[in-house]
Length: 289
Image (cartoon, rainbow, N blue to C red; front, side, top):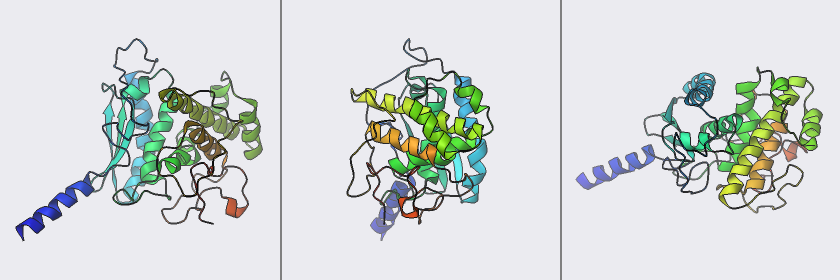
């Protein structure tokens, strides 16, 4: 009987510490890497601790009541002084929905402020991104590709829709295809600009992902042509992730149309409904129908 009780307690602890990404950076937003960018690293970008916290504060203000309404308690681990180049999400047995953000990622030379915000959105996406989700014991967690999709589909748009996005993208070197596709899918100028802005944040992250594997040359014009036989729950390739960010940005579903843990079509763009743009790429996603 004593051993049974111990087994139950150990099992509860394991479930309580379940991760969508490992908080030690081994299986986080990025694949395993040994990068470390300290606060005073000469190769760091111009990210400041103040800006780091401002971005997280904005996400917290918007999503804390949403998480609460779903029965969770949103908690942030703000590791500005930690040089780990990664991020992760975690849930505890007692209802804490945790997001772990590290200064090393925020300071990476390829990571823009918007790209850092998009990683914040990705980690929130593990908690809120809907199906497809991982299998036991992390079946609460949206898979990597779905978390990317949620990032531009809902989260980034929610956080920055009130900005003067036209002014923000004015000095960006935006590929023609991004301008064209965003203009095709949105009517209001600020919505078009927000689509462009989030797509460019995705490009920043694709370049970061590619740099870890010695790859480059990612383009919006050359999507990944691979087709999976079943949904990939692990990290897709960098081009595939760029495609996902771009498609999420192009989907015109309303922010208020929530995604679902049971219905992959809820709040998303789908081939089964005749959509040809804004849909999850087949390089990681296998549609149910």
